[in-house]
Length: 253
Image 1 (cartoon, one colour):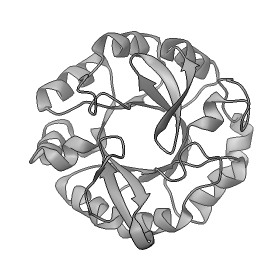
Image 2: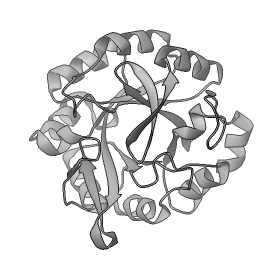
Image 3: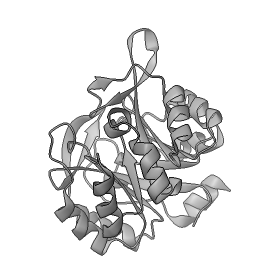
């Protein structure tokens, strides 16, 4: 496995894969099980799967779809969406999920991150910080698919959840999501320098050079790509794909 990780970030809604633009739901991408089979063939090291409406639409966790995905997946999966209790986390880990990403619940359920880290280990607990510019350009963390403003800065939130036991921060730019415009290097740099746990950057990747910049210039420990992993190119059709190993090696050497 690469010391610097590159992974697909797949978005699921009602059992199907979709791709958002600035967190507004976009086109249908395909069946998650079929996508996972292709990523298996491409020898992807890790996969992020986020159910984007599980919390906002009170759908809860789609265990049936997850069971099908896990049964076909040869790589570790980080799952997020609708998780609010330790009991649900136990069931997900028992299913074969390796990491669980907590978003709204990290802010709304007292002590959930601490309890999860204590029971399952920090390495299995990720906190997702969805970041958006507010008035006057101030960055704050949003929850519930970007609809609720916590009024907390990304760096303050990352430090808080690191202290509570989170082993990784998934830093997601709402403003860059699905735009192919490159990462927000400034916020990645701020959070990466401000915490001691790995920071996974996502939201905005449009080229291999964008991925390299997130790591080499901004200090991300890992990068997750969405549009680049499911489309032929900007404004082009669906094509499940992933950078070849040699291209990844060249990026991070």
